Length: 391
Length: 118
Image 1 (tube, rainbow over the protein chains, first blue to last red):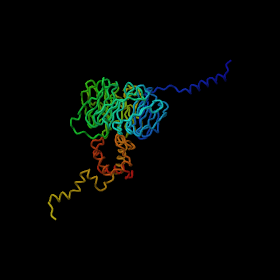
Image 2: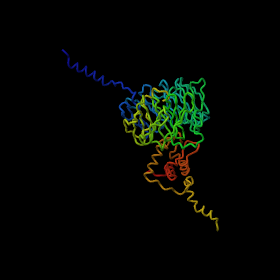
Image 3: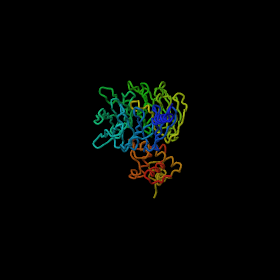
Image 4: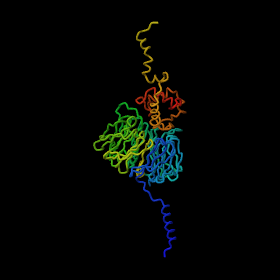
Protein backbone atom coordinates (compact mmCIF):
# COMPACT_ATOMS: atom_id res chain seq x y z
CA UNK A 1 0.00 0.00 0.00
CA UNK A 2 1.21 3.48 -0.80
CA UNK A 3 2.40 5.58 2.14
CA UNK A 4 0.31 8.69 1.48
CA UNK A 5 2.05 11.15 3.87
CA UNK A 6 5.47 10.18 2.43
CA UNK A 7 4.20 10.67 -1.12
CA UNK A 8 2.93 14.14 -0.26
CA UNK A 9 6.18 15.04 1.40
CA UNK A 10 8.09 13.87 -1.68
CA UNK A 11 5.87 15.85 -4.01
CA UNK A 12 6.22 18.95 -1.86
CA UNK A 13 10.01 18.64 -1.96
CA UNK A 14 9.92 18.34 -5.74
CA UNK A 15 7.68 21.38 -6.04
CA UNK A 16 9.90 23.43 -3.75
CA UNK A 17 12.96 22.46 -5.76
CA UNK A 18 11.21 23.48 -8.96
CA UNK A 19 10.23 26.81 -7.50
CA UNK A 20 13.70 27.52 -6.16
CA UNK A 21 15.24 26.98 -9.57
CA UNK A 22 14.82 30.10 -11.68
CA UNK A 23 13.82 29.17 -15.20
CA UNK A 24 16.40 30.06 -17.84
CA UNK A 25 15.29 33.31 -19.41
CA UNK A 26 16.54 34.39 -22.83
CA UNK A 27 17.61 38.00 -23.22
CA UNK A 28 17.86 38.23 -27.03
CA UNK A 29 14.71 40.32 -27.32
CA UNK A 30 15.42 42.60 -24.39
CA UNK A 31 16.78 46.11 -24.26
CA UNK A 32 17.16 49.17 -22.07
CA UNK A 33 16.14 52.78 -22.48
CA UNK A 34 17.93 55.54 -20.61
CA UNK A 35 15.66 57.93 -18.73
CA UNK A 36 18.13 60.78 -18.64
CA UNK A 37 16.48 63.16 -16.20
CA UNK A 38 15.58 60.66 -13.50
CA UNK A 39 18.75 58.56 -13.51
CA UNK A 40 16.81 55.41 -14.31
CA UNK A 41 16.61 52.70 -16.95
CA UNK A 42 13.59 50.81 -18.19
CA UNK A 43 13.89 47.19 -19.26
CA UNK A 44 12.16 46.62 -22.61
CA UNK A 45 10.93 43.57 -24.44
CA UNK A 46 10.90 43.92 -28.22
CA UNK A 47 8.69 40.86 -28.82
CA UNK A 48 5.85 41.89 -26.55
CA UNK A 49 6.62 45.61 -27.15
CA UNK A 50 6.37 46.32 -23.48
CA UNK A 51 8.36 47.64 -20.54
CA UNK A 52 9.23 45.04 -17.93
CA UNK A 53 10.38 47.28 -15.11
CA UNK A 54 12.53 50.18 -14.02
CA UNK A 55 15.93 50.32 -12.34
CA UNK A 56 16.63 53.52 -10.43
CA UNK A 57 19.46 55.26 -8.66
CA UNK A 58 22.03 55.29 -11.45
CA UNK A 59 23.11 58.91 -11.02
CA UNK A 60 23.47 61.46 -13.82
CA UNK A 61 22.44 59.66 -16.99
CA UNK A 62 22.50 62.62 -19.39
CA UNK A 63 24.31 61.30 -22.45
CA UNK A 64 24.54 57.88 -20.80
CA UNK A 65 25.29 54.89 -22.96
CA UNK A 66 25.83 51.21 -22.33
CA UNK A 67 27.29 48.00 -23.72
CA UNK A 68 26.26 44.39 -23.18
CA UNK A 69 28.05 41.28 -22.00
CA UNK A 70 28.21 38.67 -24.74
CA UNK A 71 25.52 36.55 -23.06
CA UNK A 72 23.17 39.55 -23.16
CA UNK A 73 22.47 39.16 -19.45
CA UNK A 74 24.43 42.16 -18.19
CA UNK A 75 24.60 45.79 -19.22
CA UNK A 76 27.52 48.07 -18.38
CA UNK A 77 26.13 51.57 -17.97
CA UNK A 78 28.39 54.61 -18.36
CA UNK A 79 26.96 57.63 -16.55
CA UNK A 80 27.81 61.24 -17.28
CA UNK A 81 28.98 61.58 -13.66
CA UNK A 82 31.72 59.00 -14.23
CA UNK A 83 29.93 56.09 -12.57
CA UNK A 84 30.11 52.65 -14.20
CA UNK A 85 27.32 50.27 -13.20
CA UNK A 86 26.84 46.61 -14.03
CA UNK A 87 23.19 45.69 -14.33
CA UNK A 88 21.75 42.15 -14.41
CA UNK A 89 18.82 42.25 -16.82
CA UNK A 90 16.77 39.22 -15.72
CA UNK A 91 16.72 40.31 -12.07
CA UNK A 92 16.79 44.07 -12.85
CA UNK A 93 19.47 44.57 -10.21
CA UNK A 94 22.70 46.54 -10.09
CA UNK A 95 25.35 43.96 -9.19
CA UNK A 96 28.46 46.17 -9.27
CA UNK A 97 29.17 49.89 -9.41
CA UNK A 98 32.33 52.01 -9.40
CA UNK A 99 32.87 55.74 -9.49
CA UNK A 100 35.59 55.67 -12.11
CA UNK A 101 35.98 59.28 -13.28
CA UNK A 102 34.56 62.76 -12.99
CA UNK A 103 32.90 62.90 -16.38
CA UNK A 104 32.32 60.10 -18.85
CA UNK A 105 30.37 59.72 -22.07
CA UNK A 106 30.52 56.08 -22.93
CA UNK A 107 32.49 52.91 -23.28
CA UNK A 108 33.09 49.65 -25.08
CA UNK A 109 33.59 45.96 -24.35
CA UNK A 110 36.38 43.71 -25.63
CA UNK A 111 35.92 41.13 -28.36
CA UNK A 112 36.00 38.28 -25.80
CA UNK A 113 33.81 40.14 -23.31
CA UNK A 114 36.41 40.15 -20.53
CA UNK A 115 37.28 43.84 -20.41
CA UNK A 116 35.06 46.88 -20.21
CA UNK A 117 36.61 50.21 -21.20
CA UNK A 118 35.28 53.65 -20.27
CA UNK A 119 36.09 56.79 -22.26
CA UNK A 120 36.43 59.85 -20.09
CA UNK A 121 36.33 63.61 -20.49
CA UNK A 122 37.54 64.28 -16.95
CA UNK A 123 40.26 63.23 -16.36
CA UNK A 124 40.78 62.69 -20.09
CA UNK A 125 41.68 59.12 -20.97
CA UNK A 126 40.38 55.58 -20.92
CA UNK A 127 40.17 53.08 -18.10
CA UNK A 128 40.00 49.31 -18.40
CA UNK A 129 37.91 47.23 -15.99
CA UNK A 130 37.41 43.52 -15.38
CA UNK A 131 33.93 42.73 -16.73
CA UNK A 132 33.32 40.35 -13.83
CA UNK A 133 33.70 42.65 -10.84
CA UNK A 134 34.59 46.06 -12.36
CA UNK A 135 38.02 46.06 -10.71
CA UNK A 136 40.47 48.43 -12.40
CA UNK A 137 42.88 46.70 -14.77
CA UNK A 138 44.57 49.58 -16.58
CA UNK A 139 44.45 53.38 -16.58
CA UNK A 140 45.51 55.07 -19.82
CA UNK A 141 45.53 58.88 -19.50
CA UNK A 142 45.22 60.69 -22.85
CA UNK A 143 48.30 62.77 -22.13
CA UNK A 144 49.23 64.40 -25.42
CA UNK A 145 51.65 66.96 -24.00
CA UNK A 146 53.30 67.10 -20.57
CA UNK A 147 50.52 67.47 -18.01
CA UNK A 148 47.83 67.93 -20.68
CA UNK A 149 45.01 65.41 -20.91
CA UNK A 150 42.59 65.36 -23.83
CA UNK A 151 38.90 64.58 -23.66
CA UNK A 152 38.35 61.19 -25.26
CA UNK A 153 35.64 60.57 -27.87
CA UNK A 154 34.77 57.88 -30.41
CA UNK A 155 35.94 54.82 -28.47
CA UNK A 156 35.28 51.52 -30.26
CA UNK A 157 36.31 47.91 -29.77
CA UNK A 158 38.27 46.13 -32.48
CA UNK A 159 39.07 42.48 -33.15
CA UNK A 160 42.22 41.27 -31.41
CA UNK A 161 41.46 42.71 -27.97
CA UNK A 162 42.10 46.21 -29.29
CA UNK A 163 40.35 49.51 -28.75
CA UNK A 164 40.54 52.69 -30.78
CA UNK A 165 39.63 56.22 -29.70
CA UNK A 166 40.04 59.89 -30.62
CA UNK A 167 41.50 62.79 -28.66
CA UNK A 168 39.29 65.85 -29.18
CA UNK A 169 41.87 68.30 -27.82
CA UNK A 170 44.92 66.79 -29.49
CA UNK A 171 43.79 65.97 -33.06
CA UNK A 172 45.02 62.42 -32.49
CA UNK A 173 43.71 58.87 -32.72
CA UNK A 174 45.11 56.20 -30.40
CA UNK A 175 44.99 52.44 -30.82
CA UNK A 176 45.32 50.40 -27.60
CA UNK A 177 46.24 46.72 -27.81
CA UNK A 178 44.94 45.06 -24.65
CA UNK A 179 45.96 41.49 -25.44
CA UNK A 180 48.01 41.89 -22.25
CA UNK A 181 45.61 44.23 -20.45
CA UNK A 182 47.96 45.06 -17.59
CA UNK A 183 50.61 46.12 -20.08
CA UNK A 184 48.66 47.97 -22.83
CA UNK A 185 50.50 48.83 -26.04
CA UNK A 186 49.51 52.17 -27.58
CA UNK A 187 49.98 53.27 -31.19
CA UNK A 188 49.31 56.91 -31.95
CA UNK A 189 48.18 58.70 -35.10
CA UNK A 190 48.75 62.44 -34.99
CA UNK A 191 47.50 65.37 -37.10
CA UNK A 192 44.37 63.42 -38.01
CA UNK A 193 42.36 66.61 -38.58
CA UNK A 194 40.99 69.31 -36.30
CA UNK A 195 38.76 68.38 -33.35
CA UNK A 196 37.60 64.78 -33.89
CA UNK A 197 34.24 64.71 -32.09
CA UNK A 198 33.00 61.13 -32.50
CA UNK A 199 33.75 58.06 -34.56
CA UNK A 200 32.51 54.71 -35.76
CA UNK A 201 34.02 51.42 -36.78
CA UNK A 202 32.54 49.62 -39.79
CA UNK A 203 30.66 46.38 -39.00
CA UNK A 204 33.63 44.28 -40.15
CA UNK A 205 35.99 46.09 -37.81
CA UNK A 206 38.16 47.21 -40.71
CA UNK A 207 37.67 50.95 -41.02
CA UNK A 208 37.61 53.54 -38.26
CA UNK A 209 36.03 56.86 -39.28
CA UNK A 210 36.25 59.94 -37.06
CA UNK A 211 34.12 63.01 -37.75
CA UNK A 212 35.91 66.36 -37.52
CA UNK A 213 34.28 69.38 -35.95
CA UNK A 214 37.03 71.86 -36.74
CA UNK A 215 37.18 71.27 -40.49
CA UNK A 216 35.11 69.83 -43.34
CA UNK A 217 36.04 66.20 -43.80
CA UNK A 218 36.49 62.97 -41.88
CA UNK A 219 39.55 61.00 -40.80
CA UNK A 220 39.61 57.32 -41.84
CA UNK A 221 42.02 54.53 -40.95
CA UNK A 222 42.11 51.19 -42.80
CA UNK A 223 43.06 48.88 -39.93
CA UNK A 224 43.71 45.96 -42.28
CA UNK A 225 46.49 47.84 -44.06
CA UNK A 226 50.03 46.55 -43.51
CA UNK A 227 50.86 49.94 -42.05
CA UNK A 228 47.61 51.68 -41.07
CA UNK A 229 47.59 55.42 -41.64
CA UNK A 230 45.10 58.25 -41.53
CA UNK A 231 43.41 59.21 -44.77
CA UNK A 232 41.12 62.21 -45.16
CA UNK A 233 37.75 61.42 -46.71
CA UNK A 234 35.11 63.82 -48.07
CA UNK A 235 37.59 66.70 -47.69
CA UNK A 236 36.11 70.18 -47.98
CA UNK A 237 32.53 68.93 -48.26
CA UNK A 238 31.29 72.39 -47.32
CA UNK A 239 32.88 73.90 -50.46
CA UNK A 240 33.59 77.17 -48.76
CA UNK A 241 30.02 77.77 -47.61
CA UNK A 242 29.52 79.32 -44.20
CA UNK A 243 28.62 76.44 -41.87
CA UNK A 244 25.39 76.69 -39.87
CA UNK A 245 25.56 76.79 -36.09
CA UNK A 246 25.75 73.28 -34.62
CA UNK A 247 23.26 72.96 -31.79
CA UNK A 248 24.12 69.34 -31.12
CA UNK A 249 27.10 67.24 -32.10
CA UNK A 250 26.22 64.44 -34.52
CA UNK A 251 26.71 60.91 -33.21
CA UNK A 252 28.62 58.62 -35.50
CA UNK A 253 28.68 55.49 -33.42
CA UNK A 254 26.02 53.24 -34.82
CA UNK A 255 24.99 51.54 -37.97
CA UNK A 256 25.76 54.01 -40.71
CA UNK A 257 26.97 51.46 -43.24
CA UNK A 258 24.50 49.98 -45.72
CA UNK A 259 25.99 47.58 -48.23
CA UNK A 260 29.16 49.17 -49.57
CA UNK A 261 28.06 52.70 -48.83
CA UNK A 262 28.49 54.69 -45.63
CA UNK A 263 25.99 57.43 -44.72
CA UNK A 264 27.49 60.20 -42.63
CA UNK A 265 26.12 63.42 -41.11
CA UNK A 266 27.57 66.64 -42.52
CA UNK A 267 28.41 68.94 -39.65
CA UNK A 268 26.99 72.46 -39.92
CA UNK A 269 24.91 71.52 -42.96
CA UNK A 270 21.50 70.03 -43.64
CA UNK A 271 22.93 67.09 -45.55
CA UNK A 272 23.71 63.41 -45.29
CA UNK A 273 26.95 62.53 -47.08
CA UNK A 274 27.23 59.21 -48.89
CA UNK A 275 30.64 57.66 -49.45
CA UNK A 276 31.70 54.44 -51.21
CA UNK A 277 33.62 52.27 -48.73
CA UNK A 278 35.68 50.66 -51.53
CA UNK A 279 37.01 53.82 -53.15
CA UNK A 280 36.17 56.31 -50.35
CA UNK A 281 34.88 58.70 -53.01
CA UNK A 282 31.75 60.77 -52.47
CA UNK A 283 28.73 59.15 -54.07
CA UNK A 284 25.96 61.57 -53.15
CA UNK A 285 24.85 64.20 -50.71
CA UNK A 286 21.24 64.04 -49.68
CA UNK A 287 19.41 67.20 -48.54
CA UNK A 288 17.56 66.59 -45.27
CA UNK A 289 15.26 68.55 -42.93
CA UNK A 290 17.89 69.79 -40.48
CA UNK A 291 21.26 68.98 -39.02
CA UNK A 292 21.56 65.22 -38.77
CA UNK A 293 22.44 63.76 -35.36
CA UNK A 294 22.00 60.02 -35.91
CA UNK A 295 22.21 58.57 -39.42
CA UNK A 296 21.41 54.90 -38.96
CA UNK A 297 21.11 52.11 -41.48
CA UNK A 298 18.47 49.44 -40.95
CA UNK A 299 20.05 46.03 -40.28
CA UNK A 300 19.27 45.01 -43.89
CA UNK A 301 20.69 48.26 -45.26
CA UNK A 302 17.59 48.99 -47.29
CA UNK A 303 16.76 52.27 -45.58
CA UNK A 304 18.66 54.86 -43.55
CA UNK A 305 16.92 56.75 -40.75
CA UNK A 306 17.91 60.26 -39.75
CA UNK A 307 17.04 62.43 -36.76
CA UNK A 308 18.04 66.04 -36.17
CA UNK A 309 19.40 68.63 -33.78
CA UNK A 310 17.23 71.30 -32.13
CA UNK A 311 15.14 73.07 -33.52
CA UNK A 312 14.31 70.38 -36.11
CA UNK A 313 14.33 67.52 -33.64
CA UNK A 314 10.65 66.65 -33.86
CA UNK A 315 11.21 65.06 -37.24
CA UNK A 316 12.58 61.79 -38.56
CA UNK A 317 13.37 61.22 -42.21
CA UNK A 318 13.89 57.94 -43.99
CA UNK A 319 16.27 57.59 -46.95
CA UNK A 320 15.83 54.82 -49.51
CA UNK A 321 19.34 53.51 -50.24
CA UNK A 322 18.43 52.48 -53.79
CA UNK A 323 17.27 55.89 -54.98
CA UNK A 324 19.30 57.92 -52.40
CA UNK A 325 16.19 59.98 -51.73
CA UNK A 326 14.12 60.80 -48.68
CA UNK A 327 11.02 58.64 -49.07
CA UNK A 328 9.29 59.26 -45.77
CA UNK A 329 9.17 61.94 -43.10
CA UNK A 330 7.18 62.00 -39.90
CA UNK A 331 7.01 63.40 -36.37
CA UNK A 332 7.12 60.68 -33.74
CA UNK A 333 7.12 63.14 -30.82
CA UNK A 334 8.93 66.14 -29.41
CA UNK A 335 12.72 66.10 -29.16
CA UNK A 336 13.56 62.82 -30.85
CA UNK A 337 16.89 61.73 -29.40
CA UNK A 338 17.57 58.19 -30.54
CA UNK A 339 16.50 55.31 -32.76
CA UNK A 340 17.22 51.61 -32.29
CA UNK A 341 16.34 48.76 -34.65
CA UNK A 342 15.13 45.36 -33.54
CA UNK A 343 17.75 42.68 -34.34
CA UNK A 344 16.42 41.93 -37.84
CA UNK A 345 14.97 45.36 -38.44
CA UNK A 346 11.21 44.87 -38.74
CA UNK A 347 10.72 47.72 -36.30
CA UNK A 348 12.55 50.78 -35.01
CA UNK A 349 12.13 52.16 -31.50
CA UNK A 350 12.31 55.93 -31.28
CA UNK A 351 12.69 57.98 -28.09
CA UNK A 352 10.99 61.39 -27.87
CA UNK A 353 12.38 63.16 -24.81
CA UNK A 354 9.85 65.97 -24.48
CA UNK A 355 6.87 63.74 -25.23
CA UNK A 356 8.00 61.31 -22.51
CA UNK A 357 7.43 58.37 -24.81
CA UNK A 358 8.95 55.72 -27.02
CA UNK A 359 7.32 54.91 -30.36
CA UNK A 360 7.67 51.56 -32.07
CA UNK A 361 7.49 52.03 -35.85
CA UNK A 362 7.07 49.38 -38.54
CA UNK A 363 10.02 49.91 -40.92
CA UNK A 364 8.04 48.82 -44.02
CA UNK A 365 4.63 50.41 -43.55
CA UNK A 366 5.82 53.21 -41.20
CA UNK A 367 2.77 52.46 -39.03
CA UNK A 368 3.08 53.07 -35.30
CA UNK A 369 2.90 49.64 -33.69
CA UNK A 370 3.03 50.79 -30.07
CA UNK A 371 3.87 53.71 -27.82
CA UNK A 372 5.34 53.28 -24.35
CA UNK A 373 5.59 55.88 -21.59
CA UNK A 374 9.12 56.76 -20.46
CA UNK A 375 10.55 59.65 -18.45
CA UNK A 376 12.56 61.96 -20.77
CA UNK A 377 13.94 58.96 -22.70
CA UNK A 378 17.23 59.24 -24.57
CA UNK A 379 19.38 56.27 -25.69
CA UNK A 380 17.72 52.93 -26.51
CA UNK A 381 19.99 49.88 -26.53
CA UNK A 382 18.96 46.35 -27.50
CA UNK A 383 20.92 43.28 -26.41
CA UNK A 384 21.60 42.38 -30.07
CA UNK A 385 24.44 44.93 -29.78
CA UNK A 386 26.31 42.29 -27.76
CA UNK A 387 26.99 40.41 -30.96
CA UNK A 388 28.29 43.34 -32.98
CA UNK A 389 31.74 44.82 -33.41
CA UNK A 390 31.93 48.50 -32.54
CA UNK A 391 28.80 48.69 -30.39
CA UNK B 1 26.70 125.07 -29.33
CA UNK B 2 25.93 124.42 -32.94
CA UNK B 3 26.17 121.02 -34.32
CA UNK B 4 26.16 119.47 -37.71
CA UNK B 5 22.65 118.33 -38.48
CA UNK B 6 23.56 114.76 -39.30
CA UNK B 7 25.66 114.46 -36.14
CA UNK B 8 22.76 115.61 -34.03
CA UNK B 9 20.59 113.01 -35.66
CA UNK B 10 23.14 110.29 -34.97
CA UNK B 11 23.51 111.29 -31.32
CA UNK B 12 19.78 111.39 -30.81
CA UNK B 13 19.39 107.98 -32.37
CA UNK B 14 22.37 106.43 -30.66
CA UNK B 15 20.46 104.67 -27.85
CA UNK B 16 18.06 103.16 -30.35
CA UNK B 17 20.94 102.07 -32.58
CA UNK B 18 22.65 100.46 -29.63
CA UNK B 19 19.53 98.50 -28.85
CA UNK B 20 19.53 97.19 -32.40
CA UNK B 21 23.01 95.78 -31.87
CA UNK B 22 22.41 92.85 -29.57
CA UNK B 23 26.00 92.58 -28.41
CA UNK B 24 25.95 96.17 -27.24
CA UNK B 25 22.39 95.97 -26.00
CA UNK B 26 23.58 93.38 -23.50
CA UNK B 27 25.58 96.09 -21.78
CA UNK B 28 22.47 98.27 -21.38
CA UNK B 29 20.09 98.65 -18.46
CA UNK B 30 18.34 95.52 -17.11
CA UNK B 31 16.38 93.75 -19.81
CA UNK B 32 12.72 92.83 -19.40
CA UNK B 33 12.23 89.55 -17.55
CA UNK B 34 10.74 86.78 -19.70
CA UNK B 35 7.18 85.73 -18.92
CA UNK B 36 6.83 82.85 -16.43
CA UNK B 37 5.83 80.51 -19.26
CA UNK B 38 8.87 81.48 -21.32
CA UNK B 39 11.08 81.12 -18.25
CA UNK B 40 9.96 77.51 -17.97
CA UNK B 41 10.86 76.94 -21.63
CA UNK B 42 14.25 78.58 -21.18
CA UNK B 43 15.03 76.52 -18.10
CA UNK B 44 14.08 73.33 -19.90
CA UNK B 45 16.30 74.38 -22.81
CA UNK B 46 19.15 75.03 -20.38
CA UNK B 47 18.83 71.65 -18.75
CA UNK B 48 18.18 69.56 -21.85
CA UNK B 49 19.70 71.31 -24.87
CA UNK B 50 22.64 73.07 -23.22
CA UNK B 51 22.87 69.87 -21.19
CA UNK B 52 23.74 67.79 -24.25
CA UNK B 53 27.24 69.32 -24.21
CA UNK B 54 27.53 70.78 -20.71
CA UNK B 55 25.81 67.91 -18.89
CA UNK B 56 22.29 67.97 -17.54
CA UNK B 57 23.67 68.97 -14.16
CA UNK B 58 25.86 71.56 -15.94
CA UNK B 59 29.00 69.85 -14.66
CA UNK B 60 30.58 69.88 -18.12
CA UNK B 61 31.22 67.46 -20.93
CA UNK B 62 32.49 68.39 -24.34
CA UNK B 63 31.64 71.89 -23.17
CA UNK B 64 33.07 73.29 -19.92
CA UNK B 65 31.22 73.21 -16.58
CA UNK B 66 28.65 76.02 -16.40
CA UNK B 67 27.40 75.57 -12.83
CA UNK B 68 27.00 78.66 -10.62
CA UNK B 69 30.44 78.25 -9.06
CA UNK B 70 32.12 78.47 -12.48
CA UNK B 71 29.77 81.14 -13.85
CA UNK B 72 30.27 83.54 -10.93
CA UNK B 73 33.86 83.93 -12.14
CA UNK B 74 32.55 85.65 -15.28
CA UNK B 75 30.61 88.90 -15.76
CA UNK B 76 26.95 88.41 -16.55
CA UNK B 77 27.28 90.37 -19.80
CA UNK B 78 30.06 88.10 -21.08
CA UNK B 79 28.02 84.98 -20.35
CA UNK B 80 25.00 86.49 -22.09
CA UNK B 81 27.14 87.44 -25.09
CA UNK B 82 28.54 83.88 -25.37
CA UNK B 83 25.03 82.41 -25.21
CA UNK B 84 23.78 84.85 -27.83
CA UNK B 85 26.76 84.95 -30.20
CA UNK B 86 28.54 81.65 -29.49
CA UNK B 87 32.29 81.20 -29.29
CA UNK B 88 33.94 80.97 -32.72
CA UNK B 89 36.53 78.20 -32.96
CA UNK B 90 34.76 76.12 -30.34
CA UNK B 91 31.62 73.96 -30.61
CA UNK B 92 29.60 76.63 -28.70
CA UNK B 93 27.01 77.85 -31.23
CA UNK B 94 25.18 81.19 -31.24
CA UNK B 95 21.66 80.70 -29.88
CA UNK B 96 20.32 83.95 -31.28
CA UNK B 97 18.01 82.15 -33.69
CA UNK B 98 16.21 80.60 -30.72
CA UNK B 99 16.24 83.33 -28.06
CA UNK B 100 16.39 87.11 -27.69
CA UNK B 101 19.27 89.10 -26.21
CA UNK B 102 17.10 89.80 -23.16
CA UNK B 103 16.47 86.08 -22.71
CA UNK B 104 20.19 85.35 -23.04
CA UNK B 105 20.83 87.87 -20.31
CA UNK B 106 18.15 86.33 -18.08
CA UNK B 107 19.73 82.89 -18.61
CA UNK B 108 23.15 84.32 -17.73
CA UNK B 109 21.64 85.53 -14.46
CA UNK B 110 20.17 82.08 -13.81
CA UNK B 111 23.56 80.48 -14.45
CA UNK B 112 25.21 82.82 -11.97
CA UNK B 113 22.50 82.05 -9.43
CA UNK B 114 21.24 85.66 -9.47
CA UNK B 115 17.78 84.97 -10.80
CA UNK B 116 15.20 83.27 -8.65
CA UNK B 117 13.94 80.32 -10.62
CA UNK B 118 10.15 80.24 -10.97
